[in-house]
Amino acid sequence: MVVEVTPENIKEFQLSDIVMPMIGHDVRLPTNRDLQQIIVDIMEKDGISLSNFQNQSNIAATSASGSYRRIVVTPSQV
Image 1 (cartoon, rainbow, N blue to C red):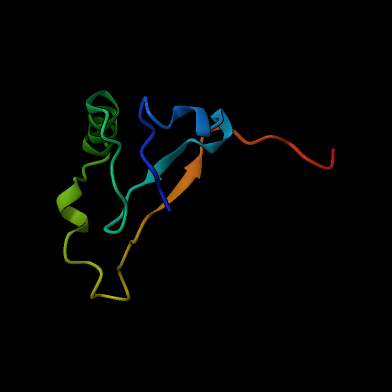
Image 2 (spheres, rainbow, N blue to C red):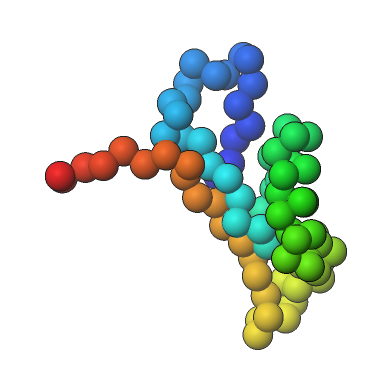
């Protein structure tokens, strides 16, 4: 579950909790407009837009639901 960090809940999270979306029809973009623009700009360079993912959830062969990846991972068992 993705939770937006706010001034009210920021103390509940660490840097290693932050995730960025891997774009698809089932992910939320960050609410930060600067981050949204970075994502949109990268997609435009690749010739795609968010509209490419609309209505894809019903087409199993080409559905790209997307996911989230942590921006920082703490190594363990090293």
